[in-house]
Amino acid sequence: MDEISTQPREYQKKIFETASTVNTLVVLPTGLGKTLIALMLAVDRKKKFPLSKIMILAPTRPLVEQHLKSFKRELPELWAEMVLFTGSVNASKRKEMFRTAEIIFSTPQCIANDLKKCLYDLSEVSLLVIDECHRCLKNYDYTSVVDFYKRQADSTIIRILGLTASPGSDAGKIKEICRHMDISEIEVRDRDSADVKSYLQEREFERVEVPFPAEFQEINVLLKRIYNSKVEELKKRNLMFGPANKINLLKLQKRLGALAGPGKFNEMRGMSLTSQAIKIAHASELLETQTLSGLNDYLRGLVKQANEKKSRGVQQLVKMGEFNAALISLNELLSRKIEHPKIEECAVLVENTFREKKDGKIIVFTQFRETASNIVSRLNLIEGVRAVTFVGQARKNDTGISQKEQKAIIEKVNSGEVNVLVATSIGEEGLDISEVSMVVFYEPIPSAIRKIQRAGRTARLKPGKLVILMTRDTRDIAYHYASTAREKKMYKNLEDVKKGLGEKTLREFT
View 1 (cartoon, one colour):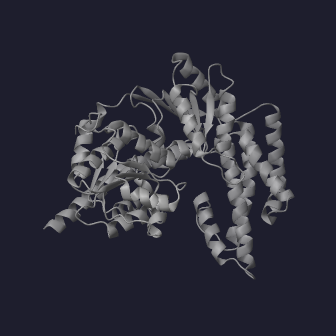
View 2 (cartoon, one colour):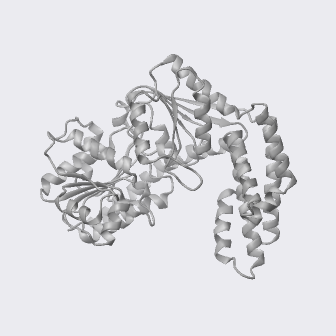
View 3 (cartoon, one colour):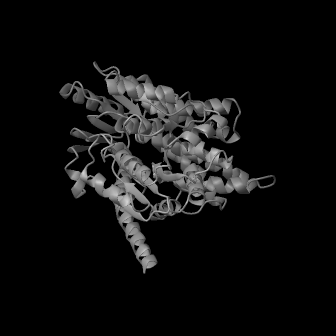
């Protein structure tokens, strides 16, 4: 393809050949060029259908802008009219932009809203690219846009390309994604695939376990005593059956919410107990896997809620002797400047990396914003470290950072002004970050999707290192094994679904 400035790799050519003939789901690790495959297919469709339009969708505006930037970099300046659709452009202007555009870049929310208002239709679209297509489930806007496309476009020009680093390990959800997008073929590659291996750099893996201090365990015993008391009462009231884990508590909360009402005293009490148990389970998770400072902020927040009489259940919770004993012990540890051992281990890893490679870049991933702030405060005490938090947009009781600020931070990372990015889940999906020397998971996560996305940030163009921090004898260990098992299960399920699609096609042909 003379129009594209980058020479595609062999596996990209093979995947393109499939995608040019049928609707295709592409599962490819981060950094292996999914966007280039989309670009090759866009060029192919425009050649076959010169008057048609191409639509590229991604879940967030920064990702959408990244795709637009890639297309503009790879294609000749006057090759096609490319436009970025955002909610900030008024509807009548978007309607006119759509009429003249040849390649449209947008979030699914923006397009779905326009289609519902009949601003335009997708009858002329010859290619719909769905980036991060593992989100193409249930009521997410991707499914709405795809449904409009399948109804409105001429069947002779319809083509759908789904892109993801991981569709998840659940076979049912993989099938649902394929069904929504009318997928006929799945192209899967991992780091060990024969045609991919030669393009990847070596990735060193290190699993670092830190001890769970005895003083932490004493606080955890108090928290678990509260938790068990709430669960036992739920069982006595015949409201809870089976294992008392977080997932089952959340399901119970939803069921009780639907049943509770005037005169339903048992269900109302059950709602309160379930809410209290979930809060204490979260406190225990912070203690085991995060930071003492974060736990302190969380418990203090509950005390504040109780003082403001916002919830009777929270008032009952903070009056418990075990709650107050846990808070006193926690404050005693913090007064002695004691923190979770992971914080110091993370600092050692970062310091050692920069000692070996002064111009390196590091990403530290964590589940919680409060933890990210605590990590940044500690890392910035190290000479030569310029760390910043990278979190999502503002939400209730949390300022967050805007998409404009997110973009500015990424530019600072790429220029070297920032050399450590401490990110929550916002940093997992397809960010345009130059090569990083090391990725640190502050905690393991049980999700295969998120593990693959996080790990894919290093060892792309240069050798890299992946480190997972775990607290010994806590849920960290179970989460690590769960994500590893789910990743293996994902690739097996993908092969099974791929085989099923092939058999379906053969039946239709015969």
